[in-house]
Length: 310
Ligand code: FAD
Image (cartoon, rainbow, N blue to C red; front, side, top):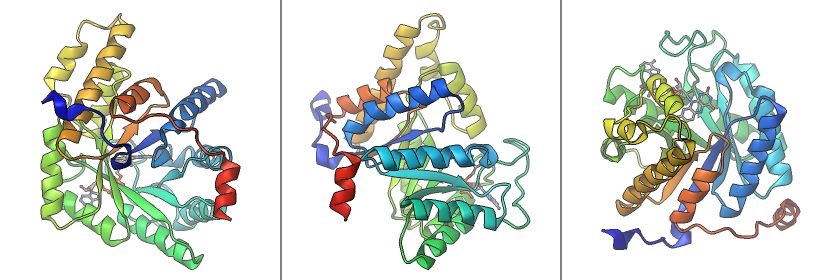
């Protein structure tokens, strides 16, 4: 019913935003414009992805560091262990710890030869995401600090997974190693997420499983991401974008409506935390957060935060 979809109490809702480190200067401006636009919504954290095979190691670090230095936001750095030795990965973690980063999104990463090929751990590396989570927690403990570690979760199962059980075993191993939050692969059919959540809870896993919401900036690109990620595209979603190939303005309105409908339905069913895949664009995410009842607040300056922490 519509009545339940009025904005919720701000303190009950938590959102986080995911960005990727830009390749070129022009994209750098788009990213920072988006961060500035979204920051006043006071996200729980903002995360920065790590390029395939560690290809953005420096750029991820630089973006995370700039968020820490120039904004009042809490950054979370994505990190993968594919194609890297344990020492190389540990160096990245130590670099984050000494820069003051206290949240890592720990992932295995995709096979170097591409999605769909067999994954082989680096001979001297962490074998999978659970192993990486344990390594990160140990490095933080060695420096007498703690670090929050989030991990991935797959409502439709990871494409390499032979069964739901194996998939949940992997999630459970990541939790046992110290992960305290999972962020899901994007999905469009909320039933898939809710059924997955039931399986996760039945398995005795109690950490938050935060739905990853992908506002559809570009339907063609979304369909190709989904095919690689093992996420399904419902026919009703394809229908909604059909015929709008040359009509960007209507596509954007539809995208906002679709994402709003998805989050409202989840809120109605008790979900209070959302992770948005922003693709470095603020408009759709800002609009959906506004519909959720989030309003901008003057963000305290980074210096004020530093003083408060001192
Ligand atoms: P894991 O959790 O280790 O494994 C994923 C699944 O694979 C398991 O649940 C299981 O079903 C199956 N599996 C793995 N190993 C085995 C095994 N030995 N036997 C049987 N089944 C197995 N990629 C990047 O490169 N950079 C990023 O910044 C990034 N960010 C992401 C953020 C989120 C929220 C998500 C959902 C994914 C992200 N990815 C990123 C993609 C991720 O790296 C890939 O999906 C990768 O293929 C798996 O990594 P993982 O950490 O999920 O793996």
